Image (cartoon, rainbow over all chains, first blue to last red; front, top):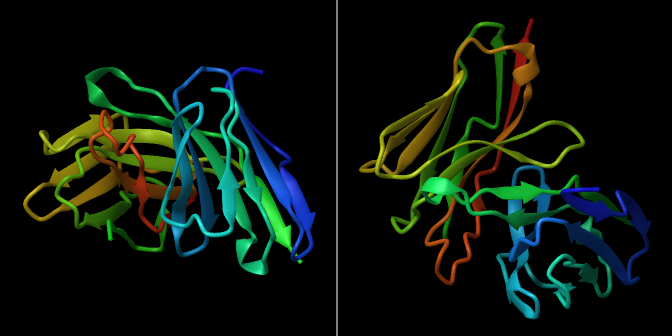
Length: 115
Length: 116
């Protein structure tokens, strides 16, 4: 499928477990991002990547790890899940349009519940 | 901290009304201001965006008004329809060609309900 996909769409896990959220894009965009969405906070940036093997922390990186060995994939790992990481996670990739507009395309999201 | 403050949190209008959502930012280095629309169960999607060299941009029924001196921008939806019911997010970014990589700082979101 063309575009940006995330898997799984829904995940329930227990406190302390490791969980990996997958993100795949077919456009070969260089830039990719992970956000979490919580009511009252909007979307907050967790990690971002400018290219394969180049990643950096965003606003709320604690408890998360990312990797990017291939341009099209950008997995997000919760090393030891906590209840505060219950959220909806969105992956995005960035295109550069004409006139300097930098549109980010978002995936459908993964709803994660940590019990 | 680079913040974008959005208001109101929720908004209810009748069909045909003109909802207005406001955002304020602090960092004068921001140079790109998009609005995203999100329907339940979906990811956000770009609705309209503006750069600070213009004061207004219109695309269909959606208009962004931008006040650089006040560091504020707003979204107006003309002739609103029930299908416009969604969550709207403002955002800001800077220097996408540099080390910021076009990272978006989002507002808190506004849940818009348009009654028939």
